[in-house]
Amino acid sequence: MQKPLPPLGWLRTFEAAARHLSFTGAARDLNMTQSAVSQQIKSLEGYLGQPLFLRRPRALELTEAGITYLPVVREAFRTLVRGTQAVTGAQQNAVQVQSNITFAVNWLAPRLPKFRVQHPEVQLNIFTELWEPREMAEGAAVEIRYSLRPSDTVRTELLRTDHYYPVCAPGYHVTLDNLQQHPLFDCSNLLSNWLGWTEEQGLNWENPAITYSTTYLVSLSVAMAGGGLCLAHDTIASDLIAQGRLVAPFVHRARMPEAYYLLLSPRAEESPGAIAFANWVRRELEHDTQK
Image: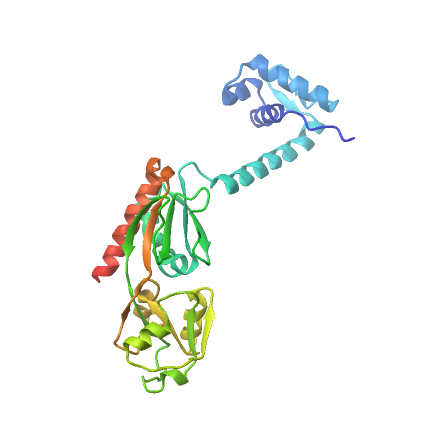
């Protein structure tokens, strides 16, 4: 059987002593006594079967074994730190945010530099979903959910109700009379769909050929590439329209049955970062609405 690893505390003490080349300096860093540091180093050397330091009158010096072992120990600690950060969210003031992927890419991501300037102390970890989740992900403090109805398990508030409408690439030629003859795209399983919009327009369509995807990102990308028309709404399309990447060829806009909701987990109430992010989202969406 392989010999088990030495205690983590001994390795931490060795790294500190090697960094300072001093048991006293290591003791100060680790909030230990100098004798406790010396004893742990002796225990580690006994475990390894060879000395790690040469004890000089006024300083320590690493032995060949110590020089070889030190980078291994340091890399092991770096790996532990990286792995722990990946699990815990990197920082204690990190805020885990959950949203659908289209909102995260089209609305949130372009505005993150502004949030960073206003709240440099808050570290966001953003998790995206393709489908509406049944409940907030474990560990999430804030969620922006695009839904027909809000959750009743956590604190929920209405953020925004949009109108939806067809969009296409600039220069794409289409009229209401020949709309059904063009390639049409949409996000699946939504009530804000082509049937609802065309009914309000008085168009009598029977079994229109529509290509569906599980995210608006696909249909929006096809439309921007000039491949047809897709349905969109202001939250995900207004920036693309302002940038000249999409246009809305028709005046009519239908009110969405779905809406955007802000969900706050109980842990958000105790997180200044989560509260700051939630307040910022409210202000940004209100500002967008007033444009």
